Length: 562
Image (cartoon, rainbow, N blue to C red):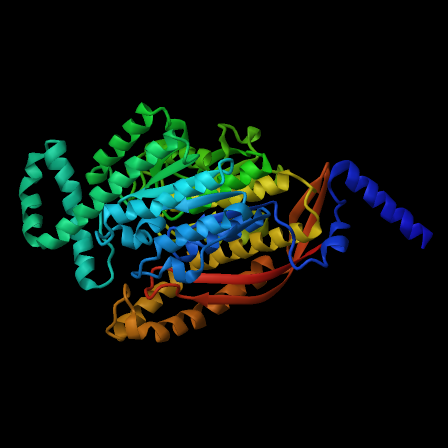
C-alpha cells in the first residue's frame, strides 16, 4: 500500500509540474469518464448532409483529438430538400459558449445547402436574414474564431433526372461560350451560343442567372464582413468550373474587392467546394493545437505548375499552395524541411509512354516508402482520374506500402476536393502526433481509431465503390429502367445491392491491409508509442442520397496500445 501511495504522489507531482499525465497513466485515471476530453470543440455548419461534408471533417478532426459538433439532421435538409437556415442560425448561438470556434457554410446557412444554392427559390433578402446569425455570433463571442466558406456557383445546374441532366450539359456549355463570345471576343462561337439559347427553356436560364447574381452579391458582402471583423477567415471556393465561363468575372471581382479592402490575406479563393469544411476545421484545430506543420509536395506525373485539372480554372500548384495555407499548414519546397509530404498522383506527362508511366508510378511508391522510413508523415492524394482512384496506383500501394502508416488517402472527387480533404485530414493528424504525449491514453486511442476508420473508409469508397461496385450498380439501375441520379422507388433494392457487394470488399481491405498492423499513436522525446489494430467491430455501408454518385462507408475498428 505504501508503495502505491508513493507512485500516486509521483504522478500527482508530475501532473502539477507539467499539466500532463504521463502516458499510460491517463488511461487508468480517465477511463472512468464516458469519453476522453478533446483538445478543442468546434461547431461546424456543413455544406450539406453528405458524408464528405459531415463524416469526413468530423472524423478527420477526431483523429486530431478535436470534437466537431453539427446541427441535427433535420436542420440540414437532405438532397433536394433544403436545410433550415433560420434554425441553424439559432443553433449556432445556442452552442456559442460551449465551443472554441465555428466553421460555417454560408451555402447551408443562407440557402439550405449546396444544391439549394444553385436554385433561385431563396430570395436575397431571406438569405441575408439567415446569415445575420454570423453577426449575432460575433457579438455574443467577440474573441472566438469564426471561419466562413461559400462557393462561387459552378457552371452547371444540379442533375436529378434525364431532363435536368440535359440542362446540366447545355447550361455548362452556354456559360462557357457566353464568356468566350462576349468577354473574350471569340465571335466564331456566336452561332453555337445562339443555338443553345434557343434550346434552353427561358425560365431555366433565368433561374440559373438569378441564383448566380444573388450568390455573388452575398459573396461580395462576406468580404466586407472580413474587413469589419465579423469573419476571421473566409474561403470562397470555385465550384466545378473551367478556364472560361461566367464564374471568371465573378472571381476577378471578388479578388479585386478583397485587395481593395486589404483583406486578401484573410480571404482565400481557390477551386473546390466539398473539401472546404475539412480544410477550415483543420485550420481551427491547428490554431487550438498551436502548431502549423510544414508541407512539401511531390508529383508522380505532370507537375502541378503545368496542369489545370478538370473542372478547375487555375494551375494545380497554385491551388495546392492556397489549400495548404487555408488548412493551417506552411508550404515548403524541400521534403527534408517538411513535417508532412503530400504525394500527388497526377496524370502522365505529355508524350510519356505506358512503360514510362509504369516506371514513374514505381518511383512514386518508392519515394513514399523512403519518406516513411525517414520518419516523415505522408499523405497521398490521387487526382489522375476525376471521382475515383487510379487502379494502377492502388495495386502498387497494396503490394508495397504499409497502409496504416499513411496519414491520408483520397481520390473521391475533383482534384481540389481530393487534395484539400487529404491535407485537412493529414495536417490534423500530423499536428496531434507532433504535440507528442500530451493528451493521455484515452484521447490518444480514440484519435488513432478515428484515423484508421477514415483511412479504411477512403480506400473502400474511393477505389472499390467507384471503380467496381458503382458500375455494377449502374447496370442494375438500367435493368430496373431507373434513374441513377434520382433512384426513387428503386432506392431500397439498389442500396441493398451496394451493401451486399461492398461490405465484403471492406472486410477484405481490413483483413489484408489493416488487421494486426501497428501504427504510431504518440511520441515522447525520442520514444515512439505504437498501437495495434486488433478488430473490425462493424462497418456500416449505405447510399446517403437517393442516387449512385456517393456511398457512405463507416467502419469501426479497435486499436490497442502496444
